[in-house]
Length: 373
Ligand code: NAD
Ligand code: GLY
Image 1 (cartoon, rainbow, N blue to C red):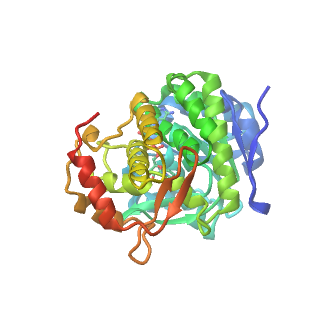
Image 2 (image 1 turned 90 degrees about the vertical axis):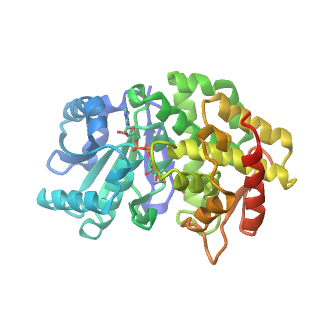
């Protein structure tokens, strides 16, 4: 029997998150309420469409819904002004109206791009997220952050625009390359490290089974992650109280590392988050906030999951002042201050707005001097 949907509780903008292996095969039933005249535009990338498109089209057809695909090249390059403009032109040519829904079928790139197109088309139409990467299933498809990259930086233009529903078929992960699975796993571990020590312990026990594709482990990990994110988003949708900022654990360090590697395949976002979380815990331990044993435990688990935990793991030997300079350009920087998510222990993350960048620089200097474990 299908598990009951989770809910992101945002008053009249609340929405369900369905998580189920094989959900694509029944997509028509789930998507029919959003289809006008029995049709839905599906925005996807060419790779996802080649591997999973047929299943979605058949699943939609079984419920009497026709899919009208719009395909983009895979990769971060599609989160651009040019791709957005071309997408909006196609949608306008198809006569999309404000009450219509788009379907975003793909990883975080497609979800962010199609979600932003939905946010601004005719001053806002609706959309449904159908995420196909582990990262998108546990993080980017839930919570309504949408946007594109611009010359000045990543995700600097966008909107908060919540989807009407999120449909997660865990079986989509069967075709996801293992490196992408591991990168998405970093975001799963993040929820344990932020506020759920028991879930982190579960990750230590079952993480490898999850990465290997065990259906029960996937269901549990994705369900726990989405429930954690939904609770945070319901409390602080627009990241104003600091609660949602906790989801940025590992991201301030990670963003600097992604910038240093040119936001390229050399370091995937989830890999940067893994390394950033290991750094955040070692930094916290160095300040006496949490024990060395916690920092060692976090580092050991991420490394066991095949994720980078040392700067040397990804060949970064940039001067610390350059890494810190990247942090100053982080969109979360405010009034010359860069917020850091630190930890008083596993499951006890908090926001610290008062970290001196000179201290971070000295810490990174020490990290660079360290031999890879
Ligand atoms: P992605 O969308 O680029 O997907 C990664 C690769 O996997 C792509 O080549 C894609 O074609 C392929 N792929 C996707 N699903 C597949 C499947 N089932 N089988 C085989 N291949 C598949 O990357 P991502 O890691 O999903 O998302 C990264 C993006 O998400 C970044 O742009 C990041 O800024 C954004 N993001 C947004 C939020 C948010 O809250 N909105 C949160 C985190 C990350
Ligand atoms: N991925 C961070 C957030 O949704 O806030």
